[in-house]
Image (cartoon, rainbow, N blue to C red; front, side, top):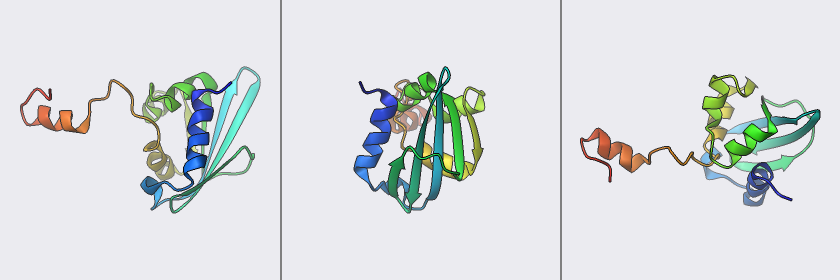
Length: 127
């Protein structure tokens, strides 16, 4: 049985290279808890080249979250940075790497598109 988190990380692994991260290098560890069970994902980024594993290694940035919440992030239903800022998820280490990595999460459905924001800012309805 798959879930949004597994689909997200496996999708990154299949890509192998992510142009949005070509200026980034480092490691991110995601520690996801579900009761007493913990799931780990280690993402290594080297100028856009991505490798995914479940190793428990020291990372440049660590994000800790309940598994259920991260499933919502991976599905594009919750904004990761907003969840960190409100304390629902914890992040430590290299925040710049986390901010760059956030670009890979699907956008939240209620977020207005860039073209709509531009039209509204210019005085139009955006529709």
